[in-house]
Length: 106
Image 1 (cartoon, helix red, strand yellow):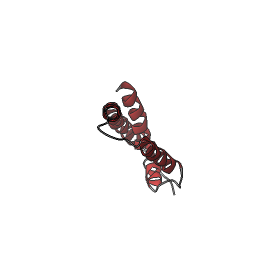
Image 2 (cartoon, rainbow, N blue to C red):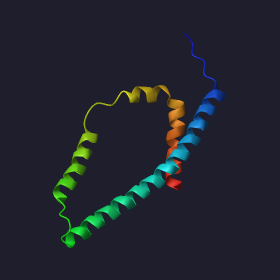
Image 3 (cartoon, rainbow, N blue to C red):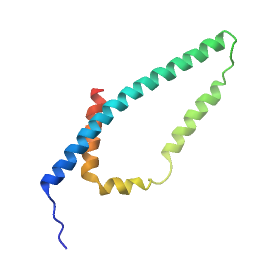
Image 4 (spheres, rainbow, N blue to C red):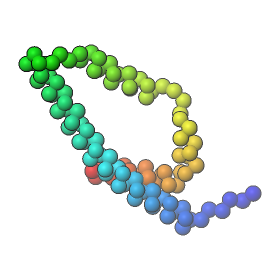
């Protein structure tokens, strides 16, 4: 059994994946910056309200939630989407490259 590879189709898939990845990477960085600002302002507001005696914040529980999320991300077997990603390597390779360029430019 012989598998035919069409270089033009492969290039088209890689290029379209790179373009889409670049756009999404650019947008993801903008959204990440916005979320970082919102979370920072929220924590500053919590600290201000706590210093005025208006609100009591359990900082231990806030930091414990962050640690639990990090531990959950480290363990376990790879999800089933990894096999799907490998089957679409030409598009995903272009997407990954484009995403990194878009994220850097964002």
